[in-house]
Length: 113
Image (cartoon, rainbow, N blue to C red; front, side, top):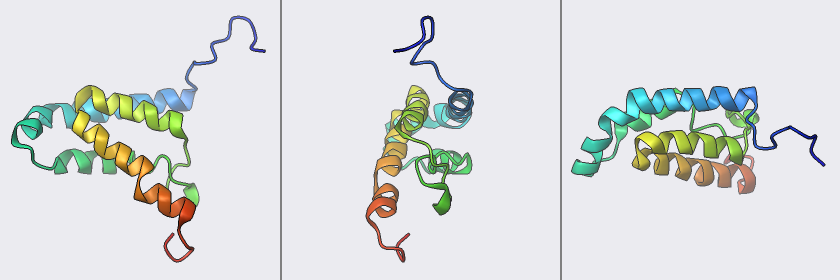
């Protein structure tokens, strides 16, 4: 049973810092380009690069493979913040969080990892 007065949904300090980072990247790098990307239907390379440079693509990957080893809650925090600025970029991040890198980590051979 939870302690009276505690919030089971309260973010940890690390989660708050991750949210701040993702929000900053989204506001600074994604938002200014989102409309143009939607209108031209071009791949958002600059947004991809900004997310990668902030190391946000690796948050769900085990540290043994160069990631941060965070879970689905942290991934959802990042996706929420990216989507506030640019849904297309958030979809790209979601594909990384739950796509090939995660499959290789959990199902791949040692050589693949």
